[in-house]
Image 1: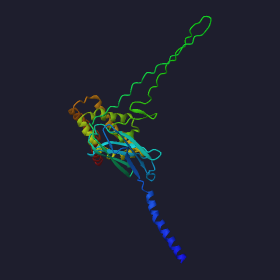
Image 2 (image 1 turned 135 degrees about the vertical axis):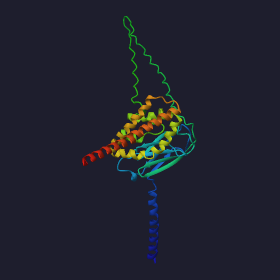
Image 3 (image 1 turned 30 degrees about the horizontal axis):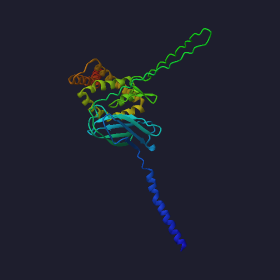
Image 4 (image 1 turned 30 degrees about the vertical axis):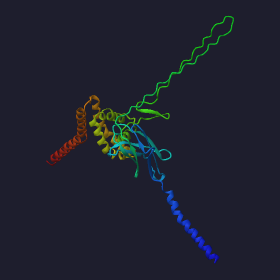
Length: 327
């Protein structure tokens, strides 16, 4: 009888242990492959939005792949986009200022993060803003430090004469080492982040955000196109189309050097045509529309009309040679 009771107790204990094991295993696998979050649930205009996240170890690719981060307004417009590299702990973080012409609508904004096939998103509330870019406060003027007064010792001799001690010359202050478009952070020169995101395809093609071609595109966008209402409306619609495929093209450029060089050659005619905007003054909406449409038609001619005409001429020449050979 004791043996039967002991066997029943052992079976009961084994059943309890085996029932608890799947629950424990499931508890260990609740970590999401990709996570993203903000430091606060809501923000006002000109507030710093700190966005951070982490990629699970098992989701890492064989090659280095940045995390694509995108912020979408309540009306569906993309207000910011960036690509962030992971640190040694597979984490990423960035700070975005809620100010500028794209930060007007109030409501719930969506933060979308993509890492290869992994996707994650979160939301935060924005109170709405005026749409103007807030200039950073000027640094306070340094308070002059009075030079120490050095007492001149008097040597006691038969004929006392004052001993003059030359005052040490102040050392010149070191000049800032960072160039234009960079700022000093934690002792390192890093690219200055500006409103509206960057050109992902051009940055990947020319290798850096500080490349002259990328800086030129950014200046045309901020100092020429975005200064008019029609230019701002054009950039809003263009961003919806451009950022739908540019992260994938930028990743392909990093993986394939031949494709990267092909994209670089393809961008050169467009960059040449945009230099025309440096020689004109755009002060009204009509001028912006006129010059903008002219630049678009010029690029259509270079990228589509000219190649099509060349193909037609070559085809006609080949047909002419074939007819001549038949005779």
